[in-house]
Length: 230
Length: 107
Image (cartoon, rainbow over all chains, first blue to last red; front, side):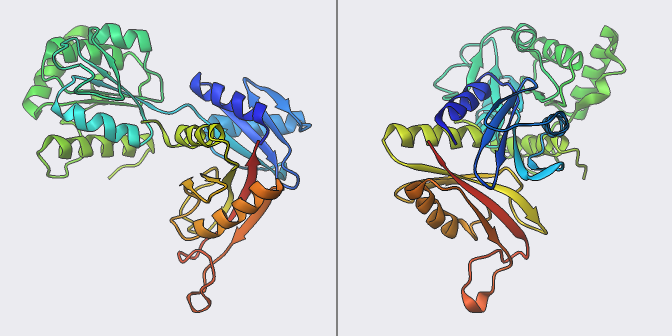
């Protein structure tokens, strides 16, 4: 891999731009494809580019169908996780999710909770959850989980999440708490969307400690991300 | 902390800054129940230090060995691993899969 391709690849990933690196296995010649245009040593036909675009869309690396001597490595931007509530569970969920490949943002306007001592190495926001999320607009590669137990903080975040294509939305709280939440969100006109909320949050693993709940939430997010069901 | 792919490139950057030769190994094709999908990366430096994985630990030793040769001569290689034969202590995949790994020097 030439140095200029390496540097562009790193820059594209930092900018969260999807890209594909195409390698001719026999001699190592490479081209980088970002935003539909190729750059590098290879001569790629429109048919090649079409198949590369399909692999980019599906986030699936592999040999090119039109020419199996060309290997396509797709670099999709990492999935994101917005954690609303810098609470005890979040202190476990944030590092676990980071290790699992998510870019994590912890959101809580209460600075006593959201501070770097409690959350080293994680992006923190002390804005109101709806403002923080409106700035970062959840996309189809984003998961949102609310953990504050406080409707004043959780509800605005859920309203933004439900208006977005976020692939996962979860809310901590008992069945009773969730029934009240559904009532409030329905009153706000989100009746059709509220079924997207996973609540009570997480897979039922039987654990009760903050770390165990974090495992169950992350397990559920991973399951939904891959379109699996129990 | 960063994501797995970012970490691979972070590691490449750190090793290059330290003046070390680096090779990148990538799973390009799999058959059967091989443990890591196409695109999985392993980075190796000239001393044999490594980060990432191209299998469940079954073939890394052999890939690291080849990677050091790639760092030395700059020629990319395509490595093939099939089912291991425990009797012969052959390098391979005990799971019964087959995998091709491309190894290139990072300039």
